[in-house]
Image 1 (spheres, one colour):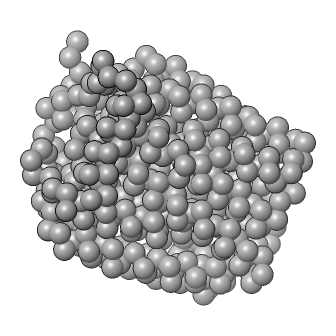
Image 2 (cartoon, rainbow, N blue to C red; image 1 turned 45 degrees about the vertical axis):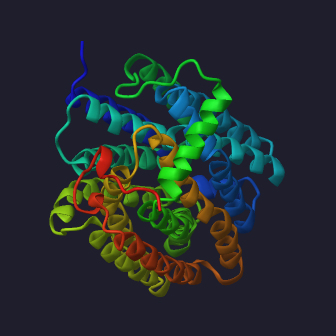
Length: 421
C-alpha cells in the first residue's frame, strides 16, 4: 500500500512522541543526578560538554550513514546506542565513578543522539515530497513540536516524581525501557520513502562523495553557512540555560531535595514547545520573510535571559524562563523549514547533522565555562553572560537574510535552492 502524506506524518509524530518521552524522563533531574553522583558544578557541566563534544565528533559521520545506508538504519542504531549508554549512566551513579568515566559515557550518549539528529527530519521531508505533500512545512514541524512538548511535559514531571519517590536512577532505567520499545516501533513502521541508498559503490567511497557534496551544498552556500554560524553561538546557551535552570530553581525555592521543582524546569520548556508549535504557523504568517521572525525572537530571547539573571526570585525566574522557552520553541519550526528549503535531498541528513554539529560545538565551550562561573559567582550572573553571547547571533541571521534565498519566503524544491558561492 502506497504511503500518504498523512500516514508519513503519523509515523513522524509517533517517533517524536517516543523519542521525546524517553529523553525527557531525565531532563528535569539530570544536573541534580550528576551533582548527587559527587560531581561539582564544573564537572557536571563538563560532563554535559563531553555529551555535546560527542555530538560534534559524530554528527557528520552518522549523517553520512543516514545518507548512504539509510535513515531507518540510522534511527535503529541510535536507539540501541542510547539504551546502552543510559544504563551505563546508572551504573556510574551507583558506584560513584570518577569523572573520566562520566566523560566516556557522555560521549556515548552524544553518539546515540547523532544517529537521530539529521536522520528523522531528513526522512520526514523526503517522504512528504515523495508522497505529494503540498502544505507548509511549518505546519508539520509545528505539530511535531506540540507532540514533543506534550511528551516532554509528561516525561519531565513523571521523572521528577519518580526520582523523588524511588531514586534518582529510576528515571534513567525507565528511559532505557522506552528506547527499547521505540526500536521495535521503528523497525515495524519506519521505511525509507523518497530516498534510495546508492548501491554498487564502495561504502567509504560513497561516504566521501556525500561528505564532499554536503560541504559544496551546505557550508559553501552563504545562506546556509550563516545560519550554521548562528547555531554555533546560540546552541551552547540553550543547553546551559536549560540545565542550569534545574539547580537554580531549587536554590530559589529553598529545598535542595524538591526534585519535582527541578522537573518543573523541563515542564516549562515542554509547555512552551506545545504553545510554540501551535503558534509557529501564525507567527510565520505575520512575516513576509522567515529571517524577520528569527531576528525578532533572537533579540527578545536575549532580553528574557537578562530578566532571568536580574530578578532573583522563584516566580520571576519561572516567568522569564517561560518567555525564553516560548520564544525559542515558536521559531524552531520556522528555522527548520528555512534550512530544509536551502539544502538538496541527497545530502539532507548530512547537512542537517552538520547544522546540529555547529549547535553542539557551542555547548562544548560554553557549558564548562559557564559552569565554572556558576561555581564562583552563582547562577544569576551566568544568565547575564548568556544574554550577551546570545546577542552575537543577530549579525549571522542578518547575513543569511542578505542572501535573499527563495526559501526565506516560501517552501522550495530542486533548482530554486541557492547555488554554492
